[in-house]
Amino acid sequence: MKKCVLFIIIFLFIFMGADWKTQLPPKEKVPQYLQDISVTIKASGAEGSGVIRTVTIDGQKINFILTAAHVIESLKKTDKMIDPISGTERQIVKFDDASVVKELVEDGKRVGELKMDARIVKYNKDEDLAICRVLKKNFVDASVVFYMDDVIPPISTEIYHVGSLLGQTGSNSMTSGIISQIGRIIDQKEYDQTNASAFPGSSGGGIYMKDGAYIGCLTRGAGEGFNLSVPMRRIKKWFISAKLMWIIDPSS
Image (cartoon, rainbow, N blue to C red):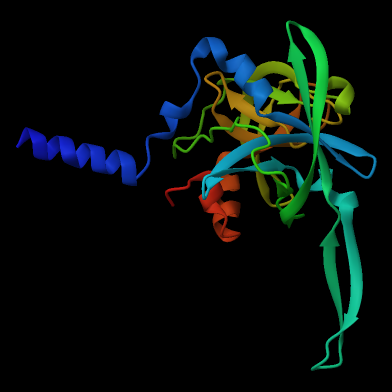
């Protein structure tokens, strides 16, 4: 009987996926982990932030970057074409590739950077969310851990923000604060509010619990201590509607 129970536990662990919390780093390594998963995104003169999500496909590590849609807005191109069947004019939206910059620091000193091109996979202006794919495989091993619980982190929860404050000049800057409010409705969209410091360039950067779990994408601000993020509950719905939930949860 005991062997049967053990087999069932192993089966569920392998085929249904380990609990997301087991993927979080040890407490003392959270700051470095947040550095490792954070990048700067450069798009036609604009600079913002992004977070790395790594998915293994056919033995190759594919690096996706989650960011805010307005960070890559300047890469959007619109072409016109005539539908050969109906004869009507149609608009085709295309995107140039973005540049993803990963800063390298050793022993407290900047030692260089990695710069790769990234293709825009999905873009949604209304949700202010976008996913890019780094064109080079195995760019990095680091990967964000998404908060997957249904329980909403309450007001006063301590959080970190990591982003490229003022662009590449402030790349991988870490600030801290609390969740100041949840469920702010602006333009019929739901946001969570934080008092963690953020500046232009922070957009697309992550909001994290103190254990390193990603709970939101910073997208809007009205001052250093009044910033809004797209919460994870909204992000999950967007990934589901975009049929990209496998990026967040490979077992889905």
